[in-house]
Length: 289
DNA sequence: CGCGCTGTACATTCTCAGGA
DNA sequence: TCCTGAGAATGTACAGCGCG
Image 1 (cartoon, chains in turn red, purple, green):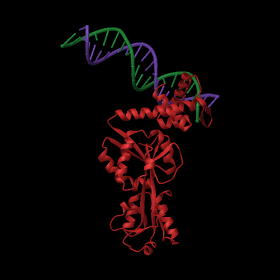
Image 2 (cartoon, chains in turn green, cyan, purple):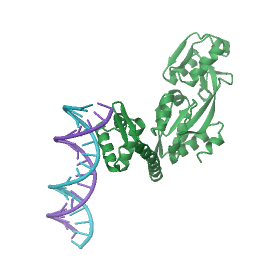
Image 3 (cartoon, protein in one colour):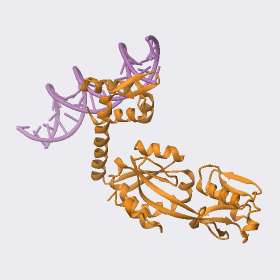
Image 4 (spheres, chains in turn red, cyan, green):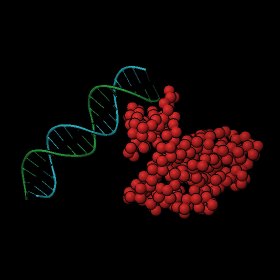
């Protein structure tokens, strides 16, 4: 059994399919079949039950998976310790990627030039799945989750503001169209729609964009209102306080418990903590140190 | 003799095509 | 969706050769 066999086994076990594992690892499916067969031959036991809808782990497979989890995490740790450069993949929903990540990335690059950071934009649900499968190293999310294999290592409170153009008065601003992300999970969109509903006001219109920049432009041109975190509010925008239950979101930085040993992830987290001007949950942090 | 380059045989790993 | 067989690509080991 070599490390590649173990990776193939691990990927098949996680995705419960030879085909999906092949796609994931850039192999053809028959090669995955062959490698698993060889592994089963070597271990003198079947690891998977083959069905016409994929595969299921057998007890021997479950046992091997627990070892594979530890071995692969250790291998990552070893590579990480020896390589002069490292790569960290951060996953975040589109809205958080656009609105929050840029403020961290510059500091990361300055403080850790040897660490190359990859950003994956993913829907919230997919984010945690990919984190569990070790396809990303760090997830940034505002959604609560319940999964013992994942761990919040840092959290921020981000203050949100209702933002208009030069219109100084909220009442006037509420007559303008709501300009929001087209992503229904976007916390800024949700906050704006909640606020409008709480004011029992009907927005003149709802304008949706896939990207942040057109939203900022619309607001600057006084063609609409939106909700933004404070650091994105720029001249000549006017910011208006929102009620606390709407105007504050909790951003969580989540890692896979098994991947939490990666040194580069810790370096980046330290950098994020130093960049952000937020509260740190020490009880959570103590789990990682 | 030691070293480095080249050619060859064999093993391993992979893809493709077709079938259950 | 998985399995199998054929064949291609790639890697590895080793022998042969020339050179200093």
